Length: 462
Ligand code: SAH
Ligand code: SF4
Ligand code: F3S
Image (tube, rainbow, N blue to C red; front, side, top):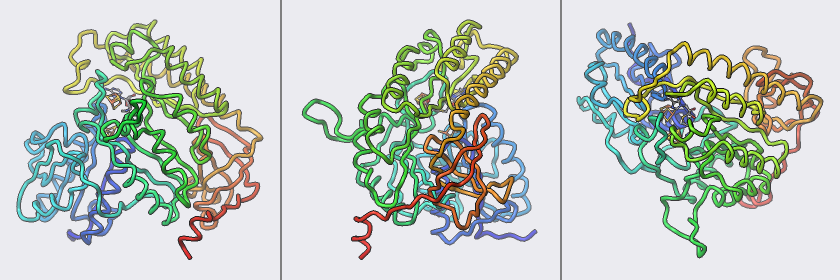
């Protein structure tokens, strides 16, 4: 078998945070002179960026790893890396389980990949899982898209939801400064990116760990202030952010979203359960009434805003009645999308060792019932777009029908329409919606929107 030690392949599991980390690690590898290999079997460096949010995500990693570990017996110069949340959770134990591994590195170490690899090339087996202050990235991320980009604004999570591994694997909250965030977005604007999504596991916590308090005793740097601060970056047409936590979501933020034209009318606010007793046992810090008030306030300011969320069914001790309260909330709110999951006990989390764990049968039955309701409600929400003209930012060709392109509305609905990707990629196009499904739309281009060059941008260019 041919060995190509200077080629790399990255396999990413999990959330947007992991995808953003993978793009930065790919940037570091490119900077070191490695080239991307589409085929993992042709790569000399294979990196698994892993997720441990649920047991099935974790198990997937082990089955992939097993295959590459075998390959290593024939190709001694193959470098195997496990990064991300399973790496952090398991640490040294991963080396015992898969001795062929060269490097186990937690998410806080993503930007240190070059140093760590150097240690591996010097002949060491390396584990990097200690809590560290996250270094600013000095290389350019190798981003998947040339139209939309993720921008980390806060790492980690200080919450202690009783089902969740994230605080254990991602560490404490660490905000990046407004200045470095703006600098990154300005660079994205210069490169032609049109949309950015600000990322954090609990993005409402942004800035709490940065110095500075206003005369009224408020933290000087909040997500709301950050939105005002970055809003005029030339070239960027759309701004999104995720994930919002109902406990900290403020009316001030809602007002800012309504006021700032580039901020899209789309809110991702997980509710997890529609039952107050369950919410309490999850340690979420809000009630279903508070959640409803947030959505009502959003809709007062932006009647057409789309709302998406995450929910868990089958939390330990959840009764049929409590589950029905979740169904009720989904019925009442009318979500555009809900990511649903059956509760999975995770190592090191309080709820994992509680008695009253529910059977797999009950969990999967509830999951099916919730999914059914979610798609009915989502289809109702999709229907409101029929006949309307929506602004779609074109991202890619439709992989199933090459005569079509795919983009998103401001409300984040996937939208397909006939067009040439070479001509339309990165353009904002007015599309008349002619058909809908639960989670996507089809339409016809009315005309490309004129994208005005920002004056400021012109002057800096001249
Ligand atoms: N920070 C975000 C979400 C983080 S994890 C928040 O606070 O909402 C993404 C989603 O995975 C969660 O919203 C939750 O719905 C789901 N999840 C987390 N832990 C889980 C577990 N142990 N079992 C099932 N789903 C889980
Ligand atoms: Fe997990 Fe809760 Fe933090 Fe979200 S807020 S990452 S669910 S601990
Ligand atoms: Fe998974 Fe880690 Fe994200 S556990 S969901 S990849 S923060």
